[in-house]
Length: 370
Image (cartoon, rainbow, N blue to C red; front, top):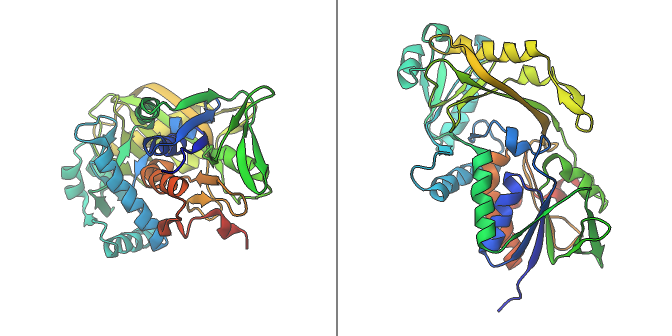
């Protein structure tokens, strides 16, 4: 019978906790080490749209589709934090060809989607303003959905605790301990050190800095993201809505999550001193949402979440063992919400069994070595 593996997971967002839960349920002794949850935890302010829309190459799209299937089996019926009520995407006339190309690529992968007109879209989603959709063609993807990550993190923590997993709060950046080309543990602070047979780096935007400790530079396009949450004065949509200027999705608590790429560029500050955004930007985000919703709602309970969005240099997931450092694995992606179930399953299997998964062949960190 193989020895029980001691694994330290650095990161308590959806990727870190998902990997830790899978490892614990496969018999590993798991310690999750992470700073307190705050604005640095991307999972607390993620738009959390579950999809494979526009993902390329085919191996990346396939990985995302597998993860969507895992969500459907993980949650069971009636989980309030997970919904698959589809999505509607529309663009202005100058982006129609690009949208059509993506929809056709999805169809070839067996990812169901249908072009619908404004009337059909309003029937599918009565919360939409029918008149605002005039002149737009829309893509309906019934298999997409959303996950309420703050609630899902609680679910994952309960899974880990049920298998006697431990949680350690980091008050300073940890140090990786390596000897003989292999990970031996993690130094938490001047007094505390965690021995480990394996370590998983799933610290979101902090992952590249951890990799630099072992001489590995991970290319990134990490940027600042703004997520606005608000309560609408009218009935909220069930589907994920992706308009040209705003993305809108419902939440389990009845609020709406709103994200606009253009608003991300209006954020001031940095990760150390803190982030800020002026009230007029928030007002513009809610106004953009109101434009597309029936009844032109007013919004209350408006809040803004700001922080770094982890993005790999080629915008594909980075997952798998780090070359030349035995026992050290990484999980880094801007699609962590979508990919967490499948990446955690594959990484946990590799760590426990020692057999590389062919599904991760295109996503290993070694691809950047060249």
